[in-house]
Length: 376
Ligand SMILES: *Cc1c(COP(=O)(O)O)cnc(C)c1O
Image 1 (cartoon, rainbow, N blue to C red):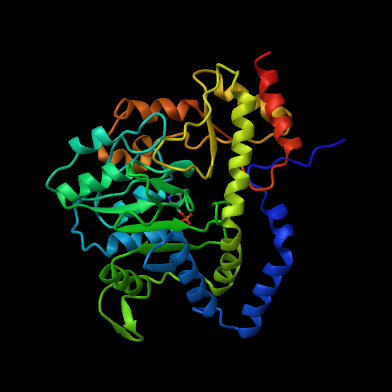
Image 2: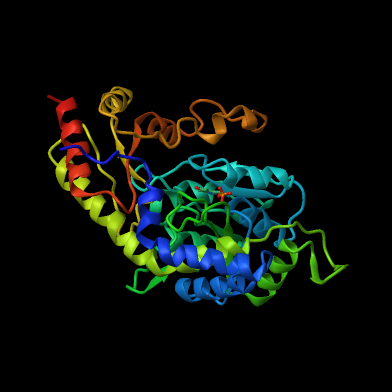
């Protein structure tokens, strides 16, 4: 008996299960030759708006563009400060710098890996204009607290929801809202390995504010409402019709895909409950978790466990090995080793295990028994 090859993400098995629908949809776009702004783009946008419970969704070319366009829509001035986390993919901070704004990092909560609310308040100055909370690995930042701080200080909030599409925030009164619908603007990515992944690049921006929505769609379209008339400086950032057609189908499966990720996470949790050296992911009481990543913590031996898994052909990944404030690209900000102790510690302890919609019990059992054998 041989086990199916284990991948971090298994997009080809996932495709096999929906192949007919997808092939047909792609073929229809090709036949119509409406490659740019074809009807699937608008349809997908409105289906996603429904799913998220927001008034407006503006599809765009990728998640990085989504963040950039969101910032551009806020009319900020060079040197204005934007607070975010150093424990994220570079894109979150990159767009801040590109627009000549100043990224201000804040350390993270050790359980959720997201912005530490207590420290956030102390970093707000009269140049602070915006907060970009990142819903890392599939669960929410403490949005209720962040929105309160933002309201008190008149700041905008752009949710980086690239990793947590489909997760819900649970408010203190028990009501729930989908992530990406709580801040002034939400940004997400359809990079193939994301929870709602296309077959190429893609992204979207969501908002309930119709004035902001108008600006966002104008900026994404060369600063133009009417062709060849340009009101502001914009960019060219479109979601391809083929990607929209694929995503429209995959959106119908998103909740099922999330349930499969949660099942795999439960399997891992139960299998590792007795391993003292491993801390399994903590789900906060204010969020559901859609497990973009299943990330364990090990105080020591993380790299040895990774190597042990590799010997059995089991992949694992370190997200993220170098916090943004210690990247050469960000040396100009003047942070140093020790600036963000929690982030720096976690960067040495995190290990993400294979997590996707096609993991079967046989594979999970093999991964978990290989992990256990490391400690024996
Ligand atoms: C993937 C990702 C992005 C960027 O999305 P792209 O579509 O790859 O441009 C931004 N922020 C976070 C947290 C991400 O994981």
